[in-house]
Structures are given as C-alpha cells and as structure tokens.
Image (tube, rainbow, N blue to C red; front, side):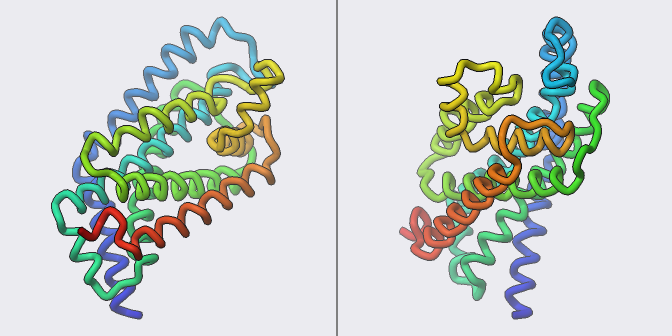
Amino acid sequence: MGGQWIAFQTIVIKEIRRFMRIWVQTVVPPMVVTTLYFIIFGNLIGSQIAPVEGHSYMDYIAPGIILMSIINNAYANVVSSFYGAKFQRYVEELLIAPISDWLILTGIVVGGVARGLVVGAAVTVVAMCFTDLQLHSPLVVIAVVLLTAILFSLGGFINAIYAKSFDDISIIPTFILTPLTYLGGIFYSIEMLPPFWQQVSLFNPILYMINAFRYGLLGVSDVSLAGAFAIISATIALLFGISVWLLHRGVGVRS
C-alpha cells in the first residue's frame, strides 16, 4: 500500500508541476479572457441590460464565467497531459508500474482539478475587480467547483484515450464543449427563453453546474439544487467507471 501511495503522489506532483511550470500559458490567458468578458459583456453591454433576478447583469454572469474557466482548464490539463504521455510513449511506464488503474486515473484527475482550482481562483480575483460577489452558500460553491473539475477532468481523459493526433484533442472542446458551455446559461437565464427552448436547455448538463454555482454565490438558480447535484454526481460515476475500464483494457494505449 505504501508503494501505491508513493506512486500516486508522484503522479499528482508531476501533473501539478507540469502546468505550474508554464503558468504564463496556463494561468494568465484565462485571466486576460475574463477581463475582456467583463469589459465587453459587463461594462459595455451589461450596462444596457436590466437586472436579472434581482442582480446586476455583471454580477449575474460572473459565476458562469468563473465556472467556464474551471471547466476548460480541468479538461485541457488532462487531455493534453495524457495524450502527451501517449505521444511520447512514456505512458507505458505507468501501465507496467505496480499501481492500480483507478489510482493512476485518480492521480491524473487530481492534476486536472488542481489546475481548474488555480485558474478558478485567479479568475475570481479578476471578477472581484468588476463585481460585488457575495458567498450565499460556501459549501455549495466548494462542492460544485470540485465536482465540476472532476467531471471535466474525466472527460478530458476519455478524449485523450481515443485521440490519435493532436488535432483530435481539440475536436471535442471546439464542437461540443464550447457550444454546451455558452448555451448553459452563462449569459442569460433560461426563463428568458421560449418554453420549447427552455425544455431543450434542460438536456444540457452544464446548465445544472452553472446554476448550482450561481446559487452558491448569488442564491438564485433556474434548476433544482438537489437535481443538479444528482446529475453531476451520476455523470462523474459513469465517466469514472468508463475511464477505469478503458485504462484497464488498454484502449488507445496498448498497441
């Protein structure tokens, strides 16, 4: 058990050092992008929009923008790290090491969660320069951030498993993740939509994460908090099971 723990620590330390070593590329860009969002959508456009559910438009969109940075960076860290291990062939060292598949996966996911949290904290500092965010429920905020980072770290791992080239690791973020994120209620309440599109929006899992996080900060949500946590937790359990099975079978890893 001691050897397994040392191996796990080694994976986690390696994953964290990997993105912190190039913090100018991993942490600074999301801060710049967030600043632009607040200047353009908050100051310029938001000043022309009426308050949403009792909050200024800038305050209303802040939770979604923060969570979007966590989603993108948790996903990007794992997909790039694991595909890089495949491309450079040192993933084989993990496969022959005396460590459980689920522990390998957990170590890689912890690295993705760490990057999501670091970037999320940096982006929150930027957001506080433009908004007057309040913590309505700290426990909800912490839970949503951790669960969301875990979920998208697992998603990044599955993408990396099936990727056969560097182009493949950008297909899912570009054509699936980004549209779902922007249509997940970051910039609007689904109550603003016609009834048909409100129902369609309920099939978007990111909607539940953003609204749960918004509830934690502002105390407002378009969906049931219990339902949101149930959907997030069930998705994590499903993705974790799939990821461990893929790793055990050597899909996309063993020639």
